[in-house]
Amino acid sequence: MTSSTLMASGLSVGDVAAAPALPDVLAPRKQRSRIGMFMYRHPTIFVGGLLVALIVAIALLAPLLFTTDPTALAPARRTRAPSAQYWFGTDMLGRDVYSRVLYGSRISLIVGFSVALLASVVGLTIGLLAGFIRILDTVVMRVMDGLQSIPGILLAIALMALTRASVENVIVAIAVTQVPPVSRLVRSVVLSLREQPYVEAAVAAGTRTPIIILKHILPNTLAPVTVQATFICASAMITEATLSFIGAGTPPIIPSWGNIMAEGRALWQVKPYIVFFPAIFLSITVLAVNLLGDGLRDALDPRLAKRI
Amino acid sequence: MFAYAIRRILATIPVMAIVALFVFSLLYLAPGDPAAIIAGDQATPADVDRIRISLGLDRPFLIRFGEWAWQVLNGDLGVSIFTNLPVTHMISQRIEPTLSLMSLTLIFSISFAIPMGVLAAWKQGAWIDRVVMVVAVLGFSVPVFVVGYILAYAFALQLDWFPVQGYTPISVGILPWFQNLALPSLALGLAFIALLARITRATMLEVLSQDYVRTAKAKGVDQRAILFVHALKNAAVPIVTIIGIGFAGLIGGAVVTESVFAIPGVGRLVVDAILRRDYPVIQGVVLMFSFVYVLVNLAVDLLYTLFDPRIRY
Image (cartoon, rainbow over all chains, first blue to last red; front, side):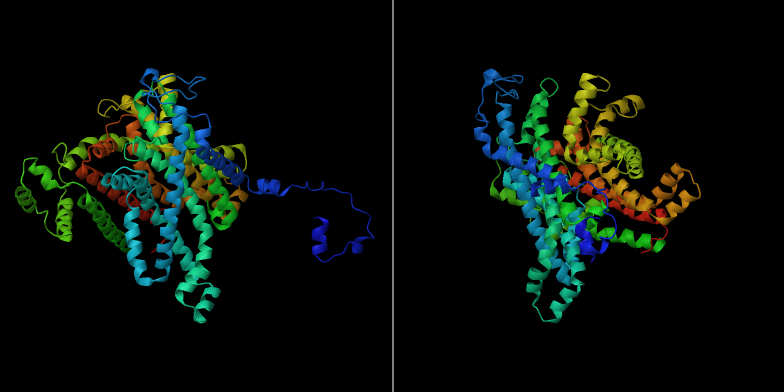
């Protein structure tokens, strides 16, 4: 017990003055800076956030990081091994793998963030409405059941087969697979919030439903949705790479990690580096976002953290 | 129990109907006019119209959906645009490798992940717990095809313990069959192992703090018996639920794993179909896998009552 908690418990130092001074058994608590304290309390948010920031910086600064044109063909220098000139080697068309991997981070980040945003906004809207409007609830939730019964990657493949390959279409196709879990989550939060006394009080006071949804319900759904969105971002990056890898994703002319791996596939037994460099970047990025999500969940939603 | 089973089975019918509606819309919305393709380049617009009417493509959406659904119920998934073979025939030719891959993955994952999760919960905070949690985070973060390439590079190319790729039917011999599938099913299993180990650890931690576990300890029951009999049995319901839910990821992962290891399964079939825009095949495979997924989760729900007789709905 430190002196501050003693005082908080109502005892003043004077009351125990008769006793001999206690030896200082507990080492004085190390004073940490605010950043140090944050690192100590949420190491995963710190490490994950730092890594994500690093990848974002790489994506933004790609032209400055000694890259060359990632699409420039040079048949004369095909499949060179990594060297001082070509850090990650060159692919079968002579393109610089280092430049392609760095520019490829842009696609993964754009897809990850956009899918997370799109799926959260749509899922929030559907979940809020379904939680409040009974008739809508049964219909919408049955549709979500159906949508969720189609394995995610297959649904995305099917949607991509319908449209032209483009980054926008990839984002929409992946977001569609992520809407059901978000709306289900939001709906469950809404259903439990509706029973809360403060919401009942608002209803009794005659507050209009849209105001209740926006002012009393929505703010309380944001924490769980943010956590969910982080995990969606991570899984969307994997799905984008997977779709591109099997030829149903980002158009091949755009360097994305999945595309680089798809192109390196034919040669991977002799030139494994073409596949491995984008693979390492993808894995580290997804790991960073997942760490961030784990940390956010522990910080924002302790109830959920205890369950898993 | 019996009434519950019947109700639960009936409840899957609307879900399957909605899945079927989605999958049908896929072909309905698919670009390209089948009538124009069949009529060929020389056809006049009148010819195309005639073919369209003879195929019944001019009728309303719901009527066509009804007819298609009736065909599906009779085991007819249509004909591939590319090979002109019935889709059911193409799937049945390719089903053995996929079934083998998924069953072996399930066996691997369950036999690795559950002991891992139990140990991690028992030794909470010890090194084994940390190792399990690191494996769990990695399993969520490293895509299945990356794991596949790393395993193939290390154990097939460098160490030469396993073949790099390909598939040997089980009828040729169980050993070559297993050698071909060992790496793919490990690669496919890692994410599943991560998921299962994590949920096993979490549920076991909860169960191990229960009074009856303390009582069992106090009366001197063997540690292993406490863990695997008393506790694991009561942790079974969430674990089985996750196996059911994780099955979707397993299906998606199988599609990719088959591409990495050149396994001629249903996953390869759908990947080839995408490149050829062979919509009936895509539709058939998506429909089949979705139905399998729904049925697996139905089975999981019915298993609950076996593991926990208290569950009555």
